[in-house]
Every structure is written in C-alpha cells, then in structure tokens.
Amino acid sequence: MRVVITGGAGFIGSHLCDRYINENHEVLCLDNFITGSKTNITQLMQNPKFTLIECDISDGLPVDGPVDRILHMASPASPIGYLSNPLLTLRAGSLGTFHALDLARKHDARILLASTSEIYGDPKVHPQTEDYWGNVNPIGLRSVYDEAKRFSESVVMCYHRQYGVQTRIVRIFNTYGPRMQANDGRALPTFLSQALAGEPLTVFGDGKQTRSFCFVSDLVEGLCRLLESSFTEPVNLGNPDEITVIELAREICDLVDQASDIRFETLPQDDPQLRRPDISRAQDILDWNPTVTRQEGIARTLDHFRQVLQHTPSSL
Image (cartoon, rainbow, N blue to C red):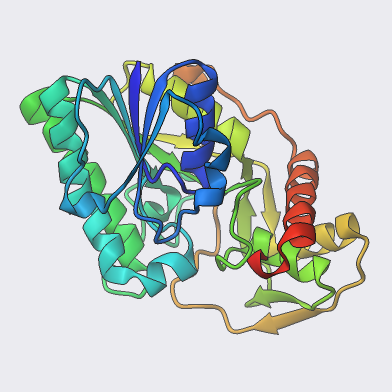
C-alpha cells in the first residue's frame, strides 16, 4: 500500500511511520515541523520506501501518484503546542482536514481522522462513551484544539455521507511513550523530566483530577486495526486504567528513585477533572485491548528520556 501520514514527524505519527515501513508499505510523511521533529524520523530517512514532504497541510497536500490510506494526524496536540499556535491549530483541523479528505476522495483512499478525548471537554459522564456529546467551552483558551477536532469530525462524517468517502474516526485519550516532548505541558513527560533533573514536580490544582494513560505501541495497534475495519463512527482508544495526577507524580518519583518535592500551582482554565475512556466499542469491533501496563510503559519512556538527556541535555 501507499500510505500518507500527515503529522508523520510527530510523536504518534512517527511511530505510525515506523509501523507501516516495517510492514513494507510505502510511506509519505507530511509535516511542517511546528511541533514535529526530524529526529523522530531519522531512522527512516535512508529507506527507499519513505518520503518526507515538508509542507503546511492547511495549504494543501502536495502528493503525487496513487494513495491507498491516509492517516490524518497533523495538529499540535499538547497544551503548549496549541496554545502557542492557536490559529495554526484551527487551520490544521479545518482546512487541513478538507485537503486530506479531498485527497482521499480523489484516490478512493481510506482515511482515518485522529480526533481526541478533548472533544468531551470537562465531562459530566464517566467513563466517557462515544455517544456522549461532551461538556465544552467553545470560546476558552483550550477551544482552539477541542473545537478544531469537533469540526474535523463533522467534516469527516459529511464527506462520508455525501461522497461515500471511506472514513474512520478515532478519539485518542492520553498517550505516552518515547519521542514525547518533555516540555509539552502534559503531566507525564513533565513529571519525568522534572524528576530526572531533581526538580520539584509541578501539580496543577489539588492533583485529584484523573487521567488514563495508554502506551504508544498499544495506540498504534488500535489505529491500524480501526483503519482496516469497516466501522465509520467514532471509536475511543485509550487505557481505562485511571489514576489521579498526584498519584502519578508519586509513582514517577518512586520509579526515578528521586525524592522530589511537589509544587502545587493554579489549575488552568477548563482543565478536565475526569478522563477515562469506555473502550467497549474498540473491544467489540476491533478486538483491541491495551497490553502495556503503566509501570512498564513509564519505565520504557523513562529509559528514552534518560538517553536523550545523556546525549542532548537541551532537548529535555
């Protein structure tokens, strides 16, 4: 197959590039490197089946030749990423999605949209099921990401209904693993980098808010299964093993073997209090379950962070 991956130099996108190259497919990686990194795809650059196209997908997808699959991953996804680039985030979710869908329609290709658990906002239903419409602030600071993804889902469904495009939608919950940016503002990589540096761990609010963390290899497996399925409505992918933020901070201190202090700061606007996926749909339709425990996944991520810190301290 010939596979197009927008945002292919990003955290999740680069792991997808690895997966499809390892399966001997041809991969076209599109990225503008606003939040992606060339170091994430260095191992692929000499592979004849891998092509890097540096571009802004909101201006179009400059892809020649046949296309079989499209994974539309492009968007800043961390708070620091989308709050620093609010209009670019909205453009990627709107214009970028139109361009990706037009490419799929032109080539009769199957396309997967990477949506997010953030479309549920600060949920009043727990755990979150796909039929929950969410509790969102459409004009808050976080809305540039949340609303971009909600709009993307709407456009995808319109192309499916009006043009018969083969579309898939995944709602990705908190995902972690090697190649995460340590300074992206999310709890787990922030805690890891702070603990390794011997700094106090920053917890926002009282730390009682919950998150559910899925290791990146489990997510990639779910994405590939969903893309090859026939299901066209949204599917949650995440690990339902829920933990409070304060518990996570203490767990990481124990893993790093570092007696770091915890510094509490004001909770950002619209920060969700609860986050846990109901993955019944993925279990039933995809026969998918996460297999990597949080302890194992954090240990593997920690090894990666240590290696990066050892070779290039400034990158952490």
